[in-house]
Image 1 (tube, rainbow, N blue to C red):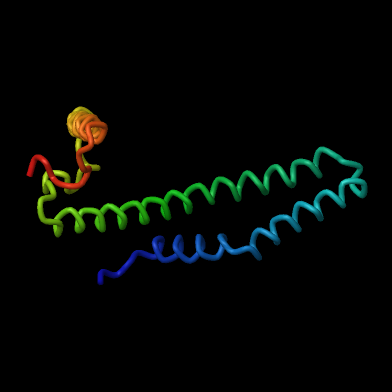
Image 2: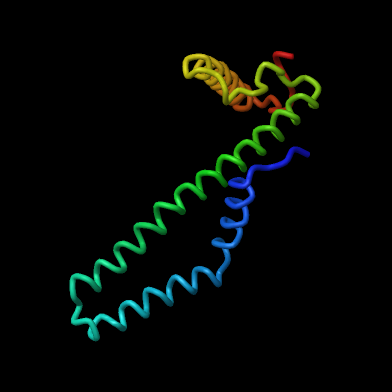
Amino acid sequence: MQNTSWYSRFAKAASHFCGRPRVFTLAVAVIAVWLVTGPLFHFSDTWQLVINTGTTIVTFLMVFLIQNTQNRDTEAIQVKLDELIRATKGAHNALLDLEELEEDNLDAFRARYQALAAAARAQLDQGFKDTDTPDA
């Protein structure tokens, strides 16, 4: 396997850590403490600014961690799907790496498969089976 960058290792560890119930409980506890301290600080602008700033910073950083996790997961799923297409007899290898196509090419593939689906539904209504590769 290839060595991963420090950011990938950090993002994976941070997303794993942040997805735990204890971290959510900690976040709820921080909000509860903030709410309880409201009367102590007379609900001042500074009191509000503390939570607004804190949550904005955490949200900003979490967006990057979430995006990294989604990108990694999506890429892994795409590779697995590509392998299933490649290994399946009768499958169209032109569908490999489909997510890299331009929008107009992707639309052409989508239109072709929508037409195949419509034809299959029409045949199903006529009592035919819905299992085979009609254009193989």
